[in-house]
Image (tube, rainbow, N blue to C red):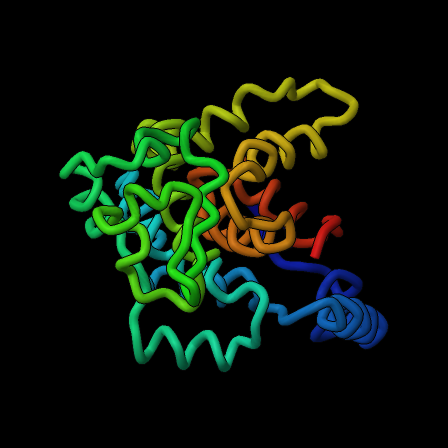
Length: 242
């Protein structure tokens, strides 16, 4: 192999071609207007530090739940207020709900994901739709910011336990893998394959789901290229709702 086969010509080398160097600089500047050039690397670094990338690799549903439920607790209020509340009172963890439900609480709504609806727990008035079971119910005992978050926490837990069979990563793989790759509406179908079922989790809006799941999907890297594609599409797609 000659040197000319591996060495760029003057026209190909931006260090020797000022016109090419200018073009590269201009394209880079335009791309940066849409976000940081290290955007994906930053997401992966943040989620790696939080243990999320390791949780995906290990199919660790409890760890993913703990991360997701905290992210979703930021809806409906400023980040500063939500962060301060969580710092003072903590969030809810998978292990806490699993332990509470292992005691078979009497409320029929805690019997499974498809039975958990119309709970109507109100933190301020300490009321719900099953007052006869209230005193023994574990749901109000978690010190979350409001009753809607308590309901969301249990609804998401039950979804991940009953619908995803305690393997949220495997469920997402299956949902995306079931979409026809030749479909003319492939990307909308991929989005809906993930967002659609989770839309029925109590108190979770499409925008919040898109924000949380896009970061999770984008963090997957080379091992799951389909995740990255869908994550990028979720990040750029406008979702209806509050």
